[in-house]
Length: 190
Image 1 (cartoon, rainbow, N blue to C red):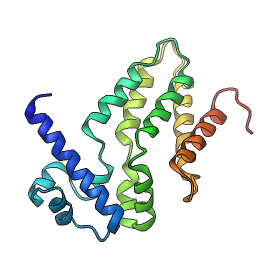
Image 2: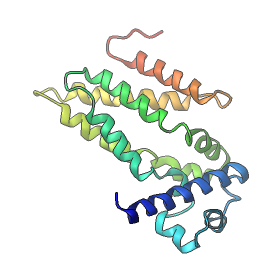
Image 3: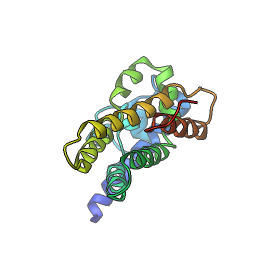
């Protein structure tokens, strides 16, 4: 990464950091783009060079995160059972969201506008994960890998949707582990 790219990434991260802090302190509705720009020491126009709107400042993935999760996928051993790979990838992806997920969750509960914007969160990750699973298909059985992917994603969504508001992020991760274990092939329901 050259100096210009590093400076752009630093600015992107400074804007997101300011937005996260302000949303946490003031809430989504009360925070303006102008406040975020001022807190990040940039102009309003510069804000829009980096983010489409204030919701994007919370929801957009760090540009380097995608490289990280793609490496996580590509580093899985070729002979590892698909379910084990999916479990590891989804768990580590969720662990990487530790700093943002609790705030995103609170903002969704407080703001219908933010909740609507947040519906597409994770689309890029799940699209990359689907392509990765497709690349692992050997032979003519496309059903089993597709089913395992859909079960793993459903287990992740279930863990999130049933995560009590008063439970810590570590509690969410334990819930995720349980959902993935129960959804796994040949695992009896507890």
